[in-house]
Structures are given as C-alpha cells and as structure tokens.
Length: 108
Image (tube, rainbow, N blue to C red; front, side):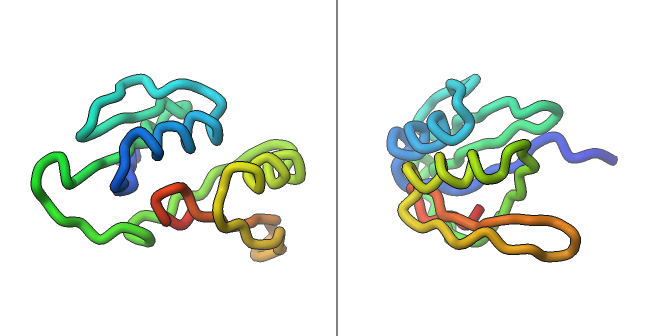
C-alpha cells in the first residue's frame, strides 16, 4: 500500500488556490470549483470544495498534512507573509517544525 493523494476542504476555491500557489510556488495541475490539486512528488495535494456538490463537510483539522522542507527558517519567514496564523518553530521528536493555518482555516 502507498499513499498517493490527500485533500483538505475549502470554502473559497479561488482564495485557497491563491494561498497554495504562493505556498508551493507553483500552479495547480487541475483547477475547478469542486476539486483542484497540486502534484508534489509522489503525492497529489487536493483542495475540495464540498459546497460545489451541495455537501457540508467540517473543515479545519480533518486532515493535517506535514511537509518536509529544506531551509526551515526560509520557509518559516515566507509562510509568515501568506498565512493568517503561524506558530513558533519548535523542536519535537528529533525534528524542528512549525504549524500554521491556510486561508480556509485548515491546520498544516
């Protein structure tokens, strides 16, 4: 078994696309009002707008992705310019990390 994709729920697809295009520094592979996604190596990272199908899905902490990056401090400074909520850099379990929220309130 291998993981090939994950998604977070969004309320405003255009706003979410702007946020993630800045975060990932690339354009989405596919964009539409219901589902858009980015190819990130072997994983597809999707944005799902349940309202486009008339469904209600809880957003915020239903999927908490973790990203491994080189140059943590550089990423931290850049994320602080685009995220409405960025926590401090901390050390935990032999790694350094920070948590933040996207434009839709999802924890990352």
